[in-house]
Image 1 (cartoon, rainbow, N blue to C red):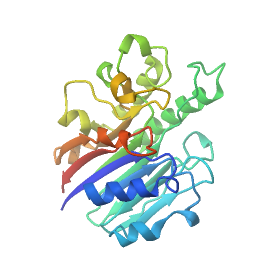
Image 2 (image 1 turned 30 degrees about the vertical axis):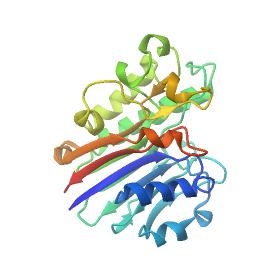
Image 3 (image 1 turned 180 degrees about the vertical axis):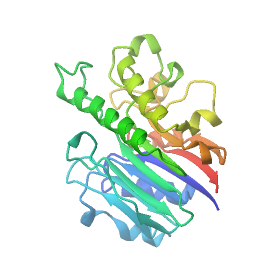
Length: 262
């Protein structure tokens, strides 16, 4: 069963419902995983998406912040969620396809501005979240699974616009990269995007603070698609929709795509 999956931090699904519909209409992914939906699920704008064929929804929401959702043309069932680091936040949800593949949708905490857990509680929460992910994968190694989302870390030197300049900036510090690597290795996850696009600079986020984000091009690859080794070989066609950053009233993130033949 071939299908195309996209992941996108939408930064408020109600505010940007029109952009989601634009993406669904123009790119027609079979599954769209959204992060930072910023709404309780009873206020999620399901009707417009259902009218476009996306009638299946598995989601966890919160009023005003966080929240993750999986929209699908294909039938999916709720496969639960986990409260990593016991934050009480809606940052993870999972859905199961009819072929048994489980899709995990994550929104890892951003971590604040100071990369020191003693000075910045949010940074400590981010590291604890990643540690809990690692421990969960070690305790129950996933199989036939896909992990996507805004992981809020750009791990490789070519996942940021300037490696040296960002070594002390949250999202690219060595301790964050190591924590993400530990979680990845614990589940033997394959970075599908970099499997398909192994070389060159690759970004999925550009700050709102840039006067001209496109010209400055100071991006980071914070959004990821991973798969377990038993299905990673079936993944192909990865791409990042850079043009979405230039849409009207955009998110600061853009969609990341991958196709799976399963």
